[in-house]
Image (cartoon, rainbow, N blue to C red; front, side):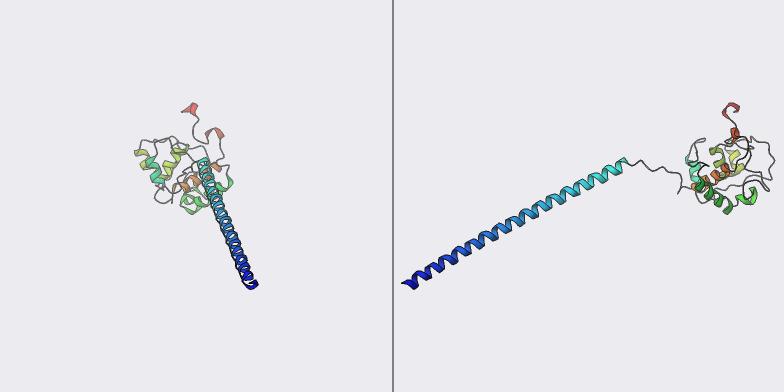
Length: 206
């Protein structure tokens, strides 16, 4: 009799223990699921914030300015209305001037106009004697097209300085527009005449 009661008690205790384990396991699994759910929500929220921030940052960035880096000098001349070519650089930018000087001497420019643009078999580029005008547009087109083609497009001589011959077209030789703008920037830095004529005749005299 006592043995029977003891067996029943042990079975009951075992069943209660089993139920406790099951309840604890379910509680643990529920907590794990809630943890995974919370982690997923946080991760998605962080991703949305990152995407929104990146999009806003890009939207606030100003558009890049095309200085003709990958455009040939001839293409830039052909696609730009007369009088609208403008140098993106200033001769106060030492780094650009240094690059322009290197380019000036690496192309045939220095062979005719001297290594420092002071003149040689062709006129100096340091004075106010601009033969076809000293503005950016005229200089860029002159170097690119050469003087013969420039005259065909309606440009006329303004300066009376004597030249050894026509200016050859350098557009097919100079690698791209950016190189030419840097060369012109170097030439501007070498100017040593009346500041009023640095970019050609003043508007009051045109």
